[in-house]
Image 1 (tube, helix red, strand yellow):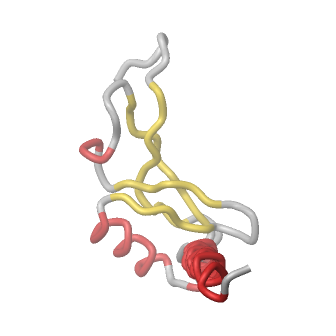
Image 2: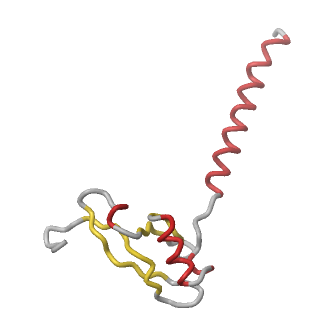
Image 3: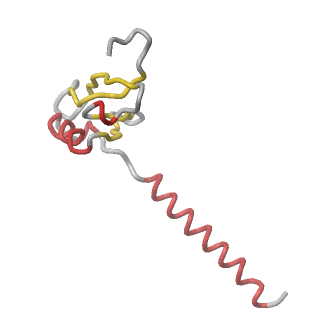
Length: 105
């Protein structure tokens, strides 16, 4: 085996390590947790971002929006309440839900 033939293998190994570290960082990113903010802060976050995914507990999350402009075609708004640090039912905004055949919206 030639000394130079080991180099491509090393480059591939380094590339794999870099890709793994980048993807691990993406997985480590967390969503804002409503239980760590006041109701006003959570409402402000939804209003400022227009649409945002928030955690509402250890294993629960959803996408919350401020208006129907953030929903896809065929979706309508459903009022959403979430637990926050200062209340158990904060009216945070809305969730986008599919329109049903029985929907009046």
